[in-house]
Length: 249
Length: 323
Ligand SMILES: Cc1cc2nc3c(=O)[nH]c(=O)nc-3n(C[C@H](O)[C@H](O)[C@H](O)COP(=O)(O)OP(=O)(O)OC[C@H]3O[C@@H](n4cnc5c(N)ncnc54)[C@H](O)[C@@H]3O)c2cc1C
Image (cartoon, rainbow over all chains, first blue to last red; front, top):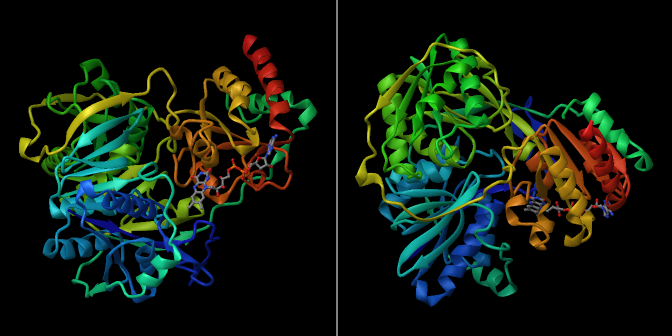
């Protein structure tokens, strides 16, 4: 079995985002780029599955659609333990382009389990995984919080509103994963960092694919009204304010 | 042309988010000069199927195929896409909840339709079709232009108010069936949370952080939630420690919610926590540290020890509620 983990290269979650060019482009100055948090968990789970020989996972590959400047993030994934990497060399216009470029690669080189994170922390789209599945005509399960392999068959738990379902699904398939899929993201050890240097990154040139959407501009949130303080000794007053001023109950 | 809304049901019932979707669709249809058609998949009785008309749906199509008890993403996509194509729908709207997130991207490919997910407002303009959405986990917003003839939107839960707009509606029972060839997933077990208010549905959420100090201190917080009819939540370290169940963790990597009122009790307000709650209409912070970042996001605050403040709030609430 072969597992592919699709990774997005995103600003560290503590980044204070700013925009330039008349609020049309992200100001990348000083940004530290990281593996999207859910993708990092997906990679961790893929590696755990591979380490248990009974799962017969031979290979864990990471794939990224993006320019060469994303290679440090790909190397991080290799250092954490991925065997090799795929990069499609283009700066994608939207999530559809990301999915379509990945689909092109996967049609020629199929994987049994494709993992995507539930969203990328930049555009918060929740779209690449499902799109990719539809393009490949694979079954998909989204909102997945656990993944195991039972007698060669993938079994996942999926979050539904107000509960959880256990779903068995034949490979090849796409799992769109979220919290729970692994406990903690794995951190690269020194040996991993050394060996990552020589692991292969296969670079593919992009197919001509147009996006379906575009960002016309960004806006910053409006500052919130200043906080109104209630004295701790007189805490009950808070309830009065919520009831009579904010009218929330 | 029409605006198509996909309506999920929960044990045969719609819920508030379903009517938020219809309300949104109805306003959007007004901008486009079109009609709203709602599509329900699964077993829903006629009285329930009449409800979307109260919020402006002109037609409700119900596909009741008994094989569709749980969502198979491929089979559902084919049914929704089939309906959209048949109607010539220009916009398809789903919730941004679990199932909406599962289906919208597949539909996007099926219908060659660009998608804007997690929207909370009507489009800025319909030609070009530009819609405002949250990006960078709430740290900014973007205006997304959807360039394709068919558009897909997913609506953030609790972000659009219900607007009554009764219409005489036609209910059409469709005999469409799921394509058995596509149904490759098999649900072997279902676990349902019963009796509790769902965190994602709740109007009021009472949430505790590491400042609650230990799992044993949750009593007054739970009592306050009970009195308010609120759901309970927590910060990530709290669920990591096992003080509270994982399903309660809110934030960037947990649940993203938008209640009317969010109590952040002993929560510092880390940027990853705010990512999950910043769309709340009112945030109340209770924290010993007057410089905690949560106060910058809050409209009401108490600087003080949660373990001393909470009993006072409970006492006052009891008094108010008994009136
Ligand atoms: C990639 C990534 C993703 C993350 N995702 C999330 C996420 O989804 N959700 C999330 O919550 N966190 C997330 N985090 C963690 C986040 O950075 C913070 O560490 C976390 O939110 C802090 O939780 P806390 O506020 O409960 O604890 P702390 O930061 O320890 O804050 C405790 C607060 O309680 C106050 N306090 C102490 N005692 C009392 C008392 N007696 N009464 C009142 N107040 C008191 C303190 O002043 C302090 O402000 C993420 C981190 C990373 C790196």
